[in-house]
Image (tube, rainbow, N blue to C red):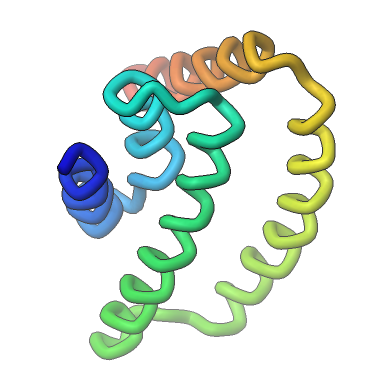
Length: 114
C-alpha cells in the first residue's frame, strides 16, 4: 500500500511540477519503505520510465512535446545514466545518501532564491 501511495504522490507532482521520480520517490522509499540508497534509486529510475512514457504521450496529445529538443536532452541523459550508474556502484551507501541530500538542499535553495 505504501508503494501505491508513493506512486500516486510521484505521479501527481511529476505532472504538476515536472518532478517526482528522484525528488519524491527516492526519499519516500528510503524513509517509508526502508530501501537502501541503491535500491531506492534503481526503483525510482524504473518508475520514472513508466511515468515518463505516460506523461510524454499525454503532453504530446496536447501538442506540447518538441521531439527534437526531447532528443537533444534525452540521448545525452541516457548516456550519462550509464556512467553515473557505474560510479554509483563504487560509492558507499552513506556517500550516496549525503550526495542526494546535498542535491536536494541545493535545489531547495535555488528555488527559494529564484
